[in-house]
Length: 80
Image 1: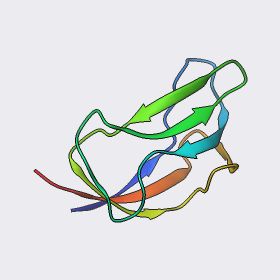
Image 2: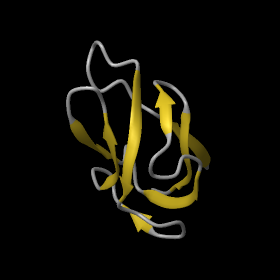
Image 3: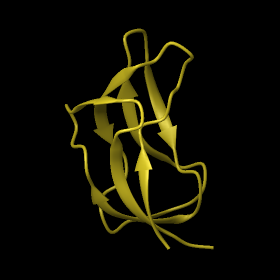
């Protein structure tokens, strides 16, 4: 099933973040818990992990993009 992942709220006060780097390239398979990308908030840079097994289909927010919590980040294909 294809799913759009959105920027999660990493801390209670987080309103926005900047994508710092992608750790997975489009077409690459990943497992639940693997780091997909890094996001910088006003206080810290955090790693965002995969919620499930899958394949990254498309990056919707390239490194350097500023996003609000809930904005689309990438499209994945869920597997198993």
